[in-house]
Image 1: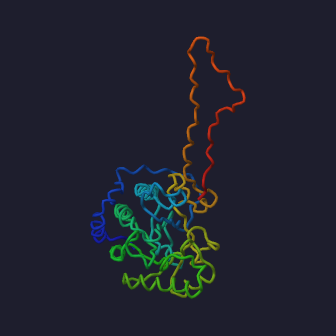
Image 2: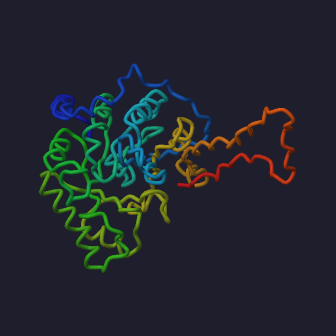
Image 3: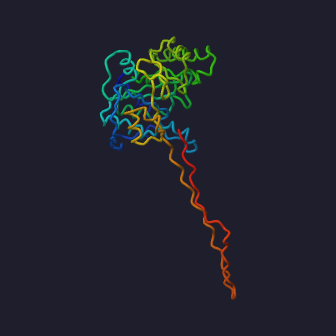
Length: 320
C-alpha cells in the first residue's frame, strides 16, 4: 500500500516530538549513489530485512551491533535505490505477483523491518516519510511500549499506510516449542494484530528464521498468504510462498556491499560482512635506563638475552 501523504504527515508530526527523530538526515546530506557492477538483476524482488534503525550503544558487542543501521545510513540506502533505478514496492505487491498477479517492475526491492522496535517510530519513520516508500513491519504482537512501539503507535502507522504484519506473540524459536504452543504463537498473533489494527494480517515472518515443515503447515492453516525467512531458505522457488528468502542489511554494510546484496541477494551467503577490526594497541616501549653521570661510571652493557620488542597482532575478525 502506498503511503498517504496527508495521513503520514500527521503521524510524522506526532513522532517528531521525540528528540531522536532529528537524527534522520535530510536529502541534502545524503551521499551520492554508488554504482555497482553486477550483471544479473533478478526479475523477482530482493527483499531487504532490517531490525533497529538507530545507533547502537557503545557497549554492545559487534555481533549484536550488526542488527543496528544508523538512521543516516538507512536514508542513504533508500536514496541509493531510488537514484539507481530500483523500484521499491510493497511486500504485498511482491506476494501478489508470485501468486500470479501482474508482474513486478524491473529491479524491484521490498523493505521489511522486524520486531517493531521503538527506534523505527523515532528514527525510521522520518526517512520513510521523506521518500514516501512502502515498508512492512513484522511486529511481536505481545509487545507494547518500552523498547518497542506502543499499540497506539502501531495503529497510527497502520492507518497511515504502513504495512504491519505478524512476527508471533513473543518471538520464540518455533521449532523448539511443543506443537500446540507453536501453533498458538502463529494463530494468536494474527488474531491479536487484526483486532488491534482492524485490518487483515496476511504475512508472517519466522523469528530467527527458524521453521520446519510442521511450522509451515501451521502458518498455512492460520490463513497467512506467505511467510518469510530471516535470510536464505531451503526452498527458494517462487512457487513456495512460505519460504521466501530475505537478505539482512547490517550495520557493517558499506555502499558497495549493500549494492551487491540488492542486485543479487545470494551474494551475501558467500561474502559475510565483517565488523571493523579494533585498532591494534601501540607497542610498549621500555624506558631508557638512566646513565650514572658520576666520574668513572660506565654505561650498562646491553643484555643480549632480552627478546626484541613485539608489536601485538590483531586477532582477526568476527564473522556475522
